[in-house]
Image (cartoon, rainbow, N blue to C red; front, side, top):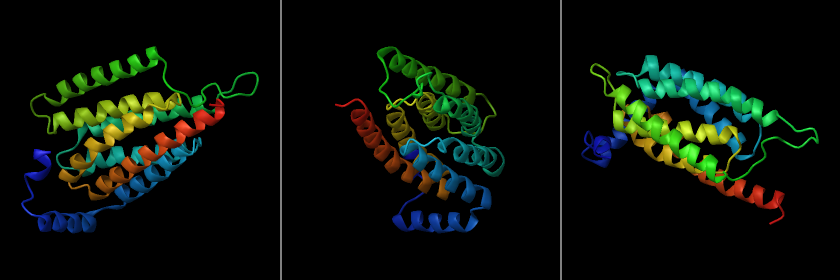
Length: 217
């Protein structure tokens, strides 16, 4: 949070930065933000359209992070390429059905082993990404980028399996992503992640209800 506030002494400074960033926002960021908001909305509704809309958003986001941000957010750009690959995997999983017509991956809580695997993925990703970003000559904010990236990697994995815990991982990731994006001048991405934070909590509550209803509890 120190990194977030050090360039702003008053609320007026923050407001002026918001106005400046809005005026400087280019179309890839606009379209990416809109596509990702639509994607999260579909995720909350447990609709497979989460993936095609998400693919549009993350590919544009990767372009923004790699080529439009100075210095580039390398880990965040690579993360969106990971989103793209996991979106293809999740799209396949969400459509897959058993012989009886039931979905192979219905909404469910993680088993103990799945939860441990997710936590291992988070820890390993955090360390790996942090070490990469600590290399000399790599312009980045290593602590925040690795934190956001690792939690999102875990969230995407659980989401591909329709695990309710994916929403908790997204909540954690969004909390870290808001100040990171704002500090880089990506105002619409900052606002987008703020909206994602609210939608993730909403999705968590809704998926819990869907699971309870489906299992007669």
